[in-house]
Length: 387
Image (cartoon, rainbow, N blue to C red):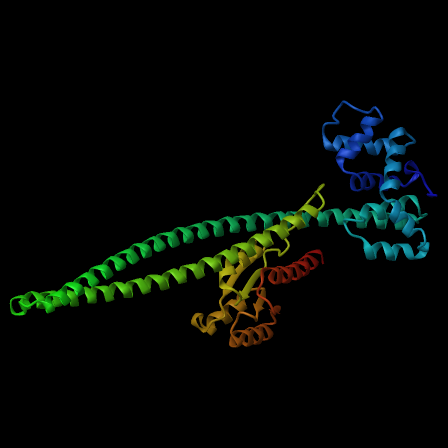
């Protein structure tokens, strides 16, 4: 048996209960079944506000809303009844996620007798969770758009390579046909030459035979040249096939990453309100080493999260002094060690320690590893901004 009916719970909880526990479609359905229609109820906020007004008093809409919550969260309510009241708040903060926020809020509001400050603290945590979800969804949306653009670029590059491969393959077939024709001509000339040698009028035909031999030599030389050209074309064909396979794998990897982001994005809660802050707060981020073909992706990650991006490939060709200068003028240094020179890693550590710059040595140069590190840096930036 619940301690309080929905209209008896603290009014502080009515707005988040309505907004988190039921989608707008179900909120509108409750009002419609209770005969509440017309007006501005075609707007989502009007539906939300009207249902809140109705659940604050004993009304058919309040009873139907309460019934849906008890049915929706029946399993959680049964599981949580055994938790002692004094252990509830630590349990609440420990397991709170966007997926179970509605069940936790309803159980806290209707099935527990909480002190006023405890209710305020729970409301504040749920309130801030909405802000965090909003900011997280914005970041996911930007990352999704970036990945989709990259996917389109890779598809175009893949089509260009396929076109080039088809043209090369067509040229190779033409050379092979010419080669076969020249082989047939050579056999005919050799047969003619043999017949001439057997002719009794050898003396009279000697000059012609020599001419044929010279022609035969030229054709053999030409045939040899053609054969070499065919071998070169075959080598080029194998090279293009290998490049096509590599690009196909890369396109598939990017497609897999795109599917993963779409899956994450589909699970994210819809944003309901308020503001977004740039996570990196315009800090300068230097990435040393890593996969050079991912440089544009690194840059988009940094700039999307509100930072400034600089890059050094970790090779001596760019110069040790240039690397030192980059470390000095940047705020944070990220150094993937799996695709990097040992000397560059040591130099980054030494410079960062001397200049007291924060640095991160990553085992992997993947996008996910760099993104996780940027998230750590971003959390540090937000803590400094709130200090």
